[in-house]
Amino acid sequence: MPYEFLFTNLDAGGSVPTFATAIRRLKARGHTVRILIDDTARSEVEAAGGIFLPWTSAPNKRNHSIEEDTVKDWEPSEPGGDLLRVLDHITIGPAAVYAADTLAELRRKPADVVVSLDLLFGPLIGAKAAGVPVVSLATQVSLFVPIPGVPPVGPGLPPATSEEDKAMAAGVAAWFASQINERLPVLNEARVKFGLHALTDGLEHPRMADMLLVATSSAFDFPAQSLPDKLSYVGPLLDPPIWATEWISPWAFDDVRPLVLVAMSSTFQNQAPTIQALLTAAADLPVRMLVTLGPGLDGATFDAPENAVVVASAPHDQVMRQAAVVVTHCGHGTVMRALANGCPMLCLPMGRDQNDNAARVAARGAGIRLTRDADGASLRTALVTLLDDPSFARSAKKLGEAIAQTEPRDALVEALERLAFNASAQPKTVHS
Image (cartoon, rainbow, N blue to C red; front, side, top):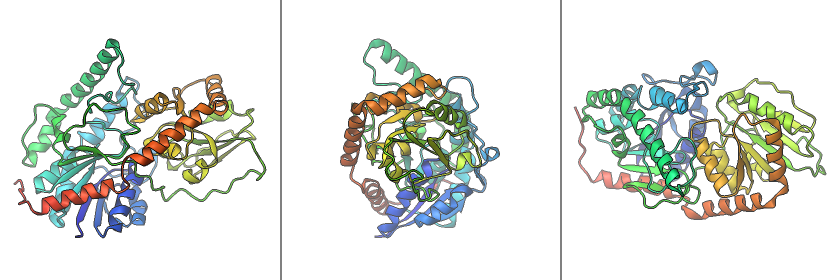
């Protein structure tokens, strides 16, 4: 039977095409999907067949300018500062207004299930207040729900193999929990305002979702000793963004130089200096280099050498089928596409979940990980190594095949349908 889903999300780059893919798959099964999201995502939502609803009380990004970005997570200098900005400006700080918008929409028109981006704590509050089942959807590795055996997120740690590694992982996890709990009074104020009980541990909050779905593959993530209750992997959701224009190669058909795709973040992360350093480092290499900028660098200019072309956008799947190497910030979507096409990667993480994605790529031998401010010599050496050593391409192909074969394509849709079906037989409890 058809169900009514309410999605809640924000325009955080890769989260939009992930949710758009989910909308398309649910629509194909006859369901209706409305989504509360920033104005900047309207065209993407409507192209997927979703019903666009703008945030009204909650923060609403109206264009892709730097001024509209309330988080500015590229600015902090202290370790973990980007995470603290996310907690203050997205996850916990505005939880009450996100909850209010979610509850208001559910009162205007009920839904069978709410599906919320894991970064947003507020919609879970609004859904629980309305007595509606709620799903937390991670569009990358699990951020807020620790998985036994998998390192805590943030610095991009590999699995612990020594007591020193274990101590470091425990320290990162403890720091993360302390930062959540330092903001617990704000979260509890929002929860109590909407009739939910106060918590003694902020990390209890995301676990209160009825279902925890992780839109990556267990084949990509580090091996888990066990999965937390209610958590499952549903595989990557990879429909291309609608703003990616068709690409026609500017190089001659018989140009046999290997193609290097530079695909950094679609949102602004102050990535222009890194892109320019790459262009300069590769200027005399026998390669063709295609740089795609995305909306975040709209209007930016670069000093491109003869062997490089800089474009606003290009369909990454099409280009990656021809590429020998992908240079990337290691956003989850770009990594999944590169692996699906068997492309080894030069990983230059900018922040967010990117260090953790890069750690998984490097650990599987599918790429080389450097810092975003790596010097020209290091960038050049890494590119030459990736081009000359075929083991990187073999490892990327092997990992991509494992990802494709692990989770069923309809895992997400079937999980949501199952929750909606089970919930339809249960009486609803609405908080006053």
